[in-house]
Length: 71
Image (cartoon, rainbow, N blue to C red; front, top):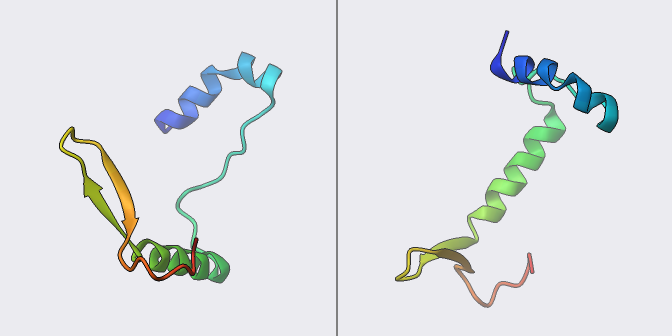
């Protein structure tokens, strides 16, 4: 039994109050709709780049400031 399943079983009393968690398998095939959505999200991430501040924190900025298609 996976750690997550053992954890969820141990939290039975909380589930009685807050409701059961949605349990699905993570090893199923992706649907065509999910593949299409994943492709769109990956394309969106290509429009941004990560910048690092001297204090170690990070932020994202558009690679092309004139492109306002996703903002």
